[in-house]
Length: 300
Length: 309
Image (cartoon, rainbow over the protein chains, first blue to last red):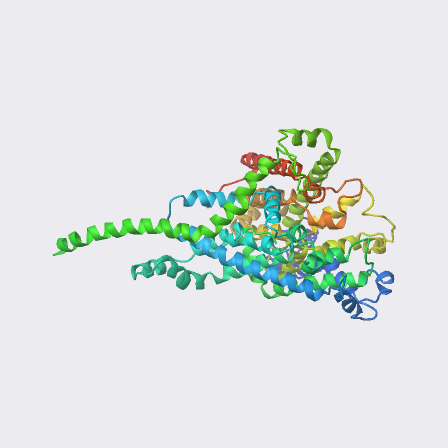
């Protein structure tokens, strides 16, 4: 309301330290959007540049380096890139990645939901101890586990199989267990208590009452599980040595080997393509992601 | 009549409670069994094995491995200059990238903590680099951006070998890390929304400017979240691997040979798994010490005062 009376001294205040209620709200809003949008563009520039470059011709990649719009639009990089290397196309690498990511995500999320219900809703001796132990494992560097795991898995002859990548997922993931637990705690207990009165066991309470209600938390967990597995590099690097088993991450790394191909157009094309599933999910499920991170501190 | 009923039902109720208590133990362990089994098989046993391996010269190819006591640890700190280089690179990276990342995260979170239109779009834009930042695709892209014929040189009109120069290589990785401030930003944003508006209104009435409001209200009330973010970033900062592996491979002159990268090389390239296990335990100890220090220091700077409201 003080905006109605604008004295020259107040107008000068705009340039002085900003105050909560100045009369120049419109100017400040425009200034805000200009600044925030320009910075956002800087943030996104490398990614946009990667996508743009994947459509540039072989020559243009070197002559028109920084442009975000190709002078002539070509799909040749995708055609060339898809051919892969050593006679194995990216179709194989994508099949491997989708297999690994799909199975790992389903295993991780299912197990996490089951374990979360156990911790959140069932009283049992040692519950606090095991819960604290689980949270502690979050801080463990994988390096203290991975060497003995490798030795055992290689003794079992499981190098170049997906067992070492998938088996450890049967226990769920501590982050997701914790997140789903928090979600279950928010569900009123009346329903499960009523069901228990009616003679429902813990198992059917979980499947009939809890499971349908924790769907949002499971979707969030599934998105993160998908991301982490899709982008996982260390585990496939250690266990998958045969190119026909390579995931997209491994294939990209081999493809972009400095001593090998220098067809940067093809590399850009395959890199862009590998990010496509990540961005599609991001755009479709942004709400779940933001909630997941904001409430439990999951890292992206 | 009433007494009769209670007399009849009471023993039954007691019996039922007892049975359900036992039943709970069984069901409780049944439900957490997937985690419990995986914990023993893939975490606890490997950790125990890793601890024992740390005192051996075990090597997959060498059947004559033996117990070597503390020799691995001695070698690390006395006879392995590359190890010391890796420590140096990791600490340098962590001490610069983590504070910068948190500063950017907080600054952008404060910018986006408004009801203006389009904020959710901006939030998505600032967060986007973080969801792809750990991928091989972005690492490969980064190598090209900072390459000799790359984007940075093209834009700046320079001809600098960013990745080949020992003074600049690690900075390309630091920039990559800072670029991905999305997760702490979202956590800060959630924290900022918790601060009651009345605090700022009261401060404004008392004549506090935005700068004073930031230092006296926002920052103190955010310290628990800064603390949380710091711990999380510290843990992941010491384990950074993929980006260095792809972008620099530890070169030049081992200036980007991060701890996890050197450990990988020792374990899976030179196959010195005993030595690498010892390195893994020192890494665990370092992370534990750093986390403990942050926890210890928290009583001096983390503000847990919700008594006001």
